[in-house]
Structure formats: structure tokens, C-alpha cells
Length: 522
Image 1 (tube, rainbow, N blue to C red):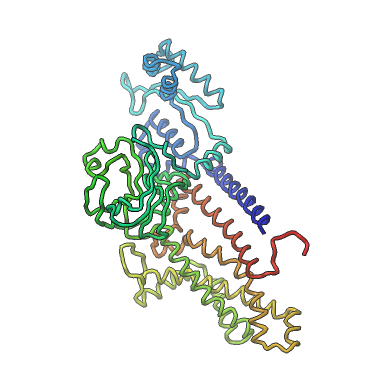
Image 2 (spheres, helix red, strand yellow):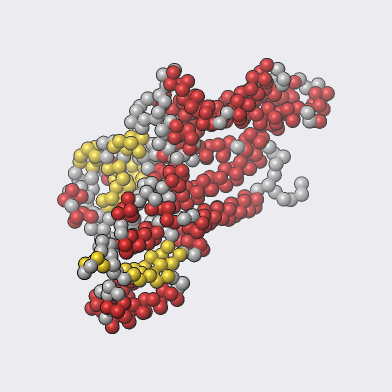
């Protein structure tokens, strides 16, 4: 079994990389990159050379290209010691046209062109656009190089940044003695409550390991996942953080800050990240913090996007198995009778009617019964979960009924069943000990996938009921051309898929001892 799982994992890793590579090719090579400006009002206000500069800057920000302005290249030369600061300042003032360049500019400009054309980049220089004797709006001269990132470099760069392991050498500047300490009394709780924590100094995160009242209660920041940065959906925020960060209104509690100040605050000190020079920037931070670990997240009253999706998804999954399995068994045992016909009619209804139609139908019926028709993060009314759960569960119930009925009827016609019947076993014993046991094996295979994919949410259901879940994240990212979110969510879905398949195989082997992953002859 171990050898099989190793092969499965290796193949899964290859599949994940392949999926991400295909998505990157589609985004960065096939799709028209000009579409990112379709709803960009800032771009629409730009003119002349200013529009070109803005365009290439945004393309770099969205990950399409590597953009190198001539002036930034000069700064790199000065920092490396290849030119002095005086030469850099003189060369930075390139002329409105090449004919106006000084000798210093001509020399370094030629070097800039030679350097980047040798790398396969395209060098762009646009003369100043004049309006009479004055520069036109956005008409300043521009000089830069740009190049597409090779797919292999893009892939390697993405996966190399996927997991970030914290280190005491992260923080820049003088932070005192760098190191990691263990405390049994967490300072966040005033040092009076027994709550073990591991605290770093010089690390990115102040708290590397800690306990709190939020599930799963034990948290770590030693290794963090970076799925990529969002450009528009949650600008500047990592995709994984966007999916896992709590939502809603702030939750105030009595907070003891590192300076000793105690006040009602929503700041979650366990999320503190190093921000160099931040205490010196404002009196507000200086009054609360003893060091530059001042960048904190806030405690909010509602679950994250994945949290909402998982709550609704896992309850609907449980309900679908509690209803679908017994009903499927009854249909098989009462084949061609009233129960079977009613179940078949329900299955046909679910298959024939578009999901959008019956979800709206359930929503209308629920509204007539007084159930909340829209989700409200700030509400404590748990009835708002009912309609989304029903809308997700009922199609799954039909699917389980259909396949379990089919598997059981197939087993009923098997030779071993006829042999068991001739051996004197009752119909009840045959169903429970033989038919149901064998027919349920394929159903068990889908359980891990149903649980894991509860985290991905349901696009249509969440949109109709205004659920702030993860289901609409991918479609929102596609509509807004947020490439970072598209790639990150794709990777997340791919990982869940391969894990679900592997766990499904393990469950099948556990339930049915006849299934073995070993290749040895038995």
C-alpha cells in the first residue's frame, strides 16, 4: 500500500503542476492582456506616453511581463557600484528626443539597449509629445525594456514561493537579540493565563505557535501558504488569506498590548507581523507596541469564505447521505413498486430541471414558509442556513439514490446472491451481509471528496442566497481578470481533487479487504 500511495502522490504532484502550467499558459499567452483595462477608469484617464507607461506597469503588476524602466536600471548600476551617484543623476535626465541626449546618456542608453536586447527583451523609447512649446498631457518622454516571462521561470518562481518558512533573519535592521523563546503564559492574555506559546524575535511573525479559542485552537505561523497575491478582488492580499480570513463586523475585547496598555480592541495580537520603523511613524503604534511587530489582523464575528462554504457544504453532505442512502436501499428492495417509482420520479425531476430553476423554486417555497431568503453575516438567525443547505443537499440525495439503487440491483442479479438464497439465507440477511456491503463500496469512495469539496463552495447556490463563501471567488476573479486569484484557486482546487481521489482509494481498501494496493501475487 505504501508503494502505491507513493506512486499516487508523485503522479498527483505532476498533475497539479501540469494543471497550473496550463492555466498560466491560458492566462498569460492565450488571453488578450488588454482586457485588464476594460473597467480601469485610471487607464481611461491616461493620455499619450502616460497611458503606455501605465499599461506596462500594470502588465508587470498582473504578472504578464518583466518591466524595466531605464531610470531603475541606472539605480541598480549605482547600488552595485558600476557607476557613481553623480553619473547616475546625470544619465537619468535623458532628452526629449535621442538628439538631445548628453554624451553620458548616449553611452549608458546604448548599454541599456544592448543589455536587454541580449536578454530577448523589447526596448521602447518614445519621444516627448509636445503641445506647442509645452509638454502635452502625459507627453513626457519614456524609455524602458520589457520581456515576457518564460513559462518554466514562472512555474518555478510560483512554486518556490508557495510555502514560506519563517526565520529569525527575516526582520531588517536592529531588532535586538534574535531568537525563539517559549512561554507558558501568553502575554496576549496579560501573562496570567496558562497558554503555551512560541514567540520569535527577528522573525516575520511574532507568534510562531499559540493557542486561542478559535478552531482548531492550536495555530502556527512557522510555515505559511502563499497562493499568490490578489490584484483586484482583495487587492494586495494573498489568495489563501482571502479565503481563510474571518469576515463581518469587528469583535472588541479587552486587549493587553505589549506596552502594557489595556483597552477594548479588535486587534488580534497573535497575527502580529514585523513592520520596520512602524513604531516611529505614529504615536498610536508607539503607545501600544514595544517593538515593530505592529501589523496585525482584526478579530471579526463571522467565519471566513471557506468557513461559510464548509459549514453549508458539510451539513448538506451529511443530510444527503442520511437521506439518500436509506432511500436508495428502499428503492432497490421495493423495485418497480410505489416507493421505487416515487424515487425515480424525484431523480428524473432533479436531472431534467436546470439547477438554477429548482434552486429558485426552493427559495420561493422557503420564503413563503418564512425562512430567510438571503444570507446576512451580521445576523444570529441560523435559519438563514436552511435554504442553501436544502438547495445543495437535494441534488446530492437524488444522485446517491440513483447510484445506490443501481449498484444494489446489479448485485441482486449476481451469482453469489443466488447461491446465498439457495443456501437458505433470508432476504434480509442477503441484503445486509452481501448486497448492501458490496454496493456501498463505490459510495464510500466519494465520501472524502464530498467532505473536502465542501470547502470550495457552490457558485450558483452561494450567489442566489448571497452567501459570502468561496464559491464565487473564482468567477469573480475571472470577471475582474485577477490572475493571481485564478492561479491560486486553481491550485487549491487541484490539490483538493487529488487528495480526495487518494483518500477515496484508501477508504475503499479499508472497507473492502478484497481491494489491495499491493502488486504481489496472493
